[in-house]
Length: 308
Image 1 (tube, helix red, strand yellow):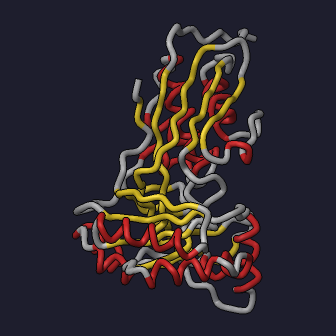
Image 2: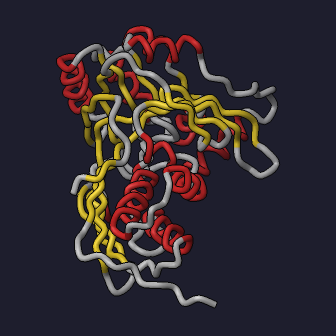
């Protein structure tokens, strides 16, 4: 049996990776394996985490930034799993220090943990010069979680299967978003369980992408996109967190074109017609007292990118 070789590199690598908003999240009935088939239209937005990989004597994780007390700093962190999976495939010991600078809301339905995993994977791949193909990296991403492949790719994409089977989508312009950060988090598995409970006596249709929504993205038409936004998990998120309804109402009253729960929540997302409107919506949301913080971002954004 061949002994694992050590990774050799003298410099650190920093990768920037974006948050996402689901402009459509169509959810099918639970499968026998417990997962759900999805038609998940991802849009990467300009809120970023940065992951820096540096050679070390052992795998360790540190973090700074917003709400880092809420993320694990051991091997249960998806970023650590990403390093381990890549190292195992290439006969390398995962001796790396991963430092995460958090700016994506934690446990907020914006794929912050998935973003960190994708960022760590690209950073380690670059640091270790593994020569992994894009297909191999995407395969590791899919093994890590349903949202991780899109965090690597960015832009806009339709995710099918569990969300990991990606088809890139054209986007014809910039979209302006406001995100309202709630107190506390929401467990994605808990939201899916609540979805199953709420739909137990209904015939859940097969999830399909909305032609109107895809056309609005391609045209860069914010008004048309606003009319087509949907999230099948929103009733479940609101069932678990009824307070989010007041946030949605406050943003809509302030002039947002549309409002929805982002993914499994509890972050709520507001589409604005232009940067000035986005600033007005963000300010009104803060005044309303229905959220802890607001963030303004433009979409689409590039996927995981090596900065240095």
